[in-house]
Image 1 (cartoon, one colour):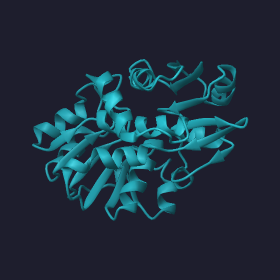
Image 2 (cartoon, rainbow, N blue to C red):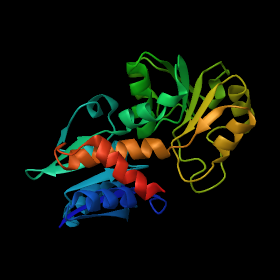
Image 3 (tube, rainbow, N blue to C red):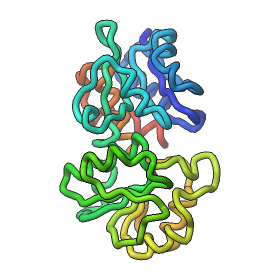
Amino acid sequence: MKKFCVFGNPVKHSISPKLHNEAFKTFGIDANYAKVLLKNADKLKEYFLKLKLSGANITVPYKETAFNTCDEIFGIAKKIEAINTIVQKDDKLFGFNTDALGFLKAIEEFGNIKNALVLGAGGTAKAVIFILQENGIHVELLNRSRDRIEFFKKIKISAFSWNDYKPKKYDLIINTTSAGLKDESLPAPKELLAQILKNAKFGFDVIYGKKTPFLTLCEENMLTCKDGADMLLYQAALAFNLFFDNIYSEKEIIKAMKTAML
């Protein structure tokens, strides 16, 4: 039996095991997918090898750690410098990022987006910003502090801290932080968010499974919004296929995983 898992902290909320195990069942694959609480970033590779995994997904806050853990990096992950999918082949750990394309597919229903503001500066923010930029959407970043924004300067993204930002008009506001996942916090001061959201059209939170305070505030400001469930589904389907050399139909994987989300 092949073994897979999702590493993160927190990870209790994750429904990734449900999605992947349902897909294993659908395709008749002898495999199991679990969730592993990882408290020490430096232990990622050690745990991966100790658990004898064939592959894994990485969630907050270890996507950038995973980038430095893998032996080889492929595709868009090289530019994003953040990994959410690891596959073991020939005794090497290969790193990929499926968050970017998963996010892009998840916002298709919003239609024509010309500009966006991303809240947060972690691995998910990197994926979201890069794919928006690559698709011709003007994007800016707002983070609590300026400590983590050097990467974004390198790819010519206007990045601001709470203290040096003046609200502007955007089509789409995206929360990539963990604010609201374990508590009722917001990704930025409420007064500042209210100024931003009153001129926006769409709101997106990468957190799924609950209406976060951010999404509640979006609705109060009459934005069309959605959580990260579709992003999770689409990135999971892409990751699943990477685990098995892309031999399965993406459409059939999504169909199988959707049944686990009902």
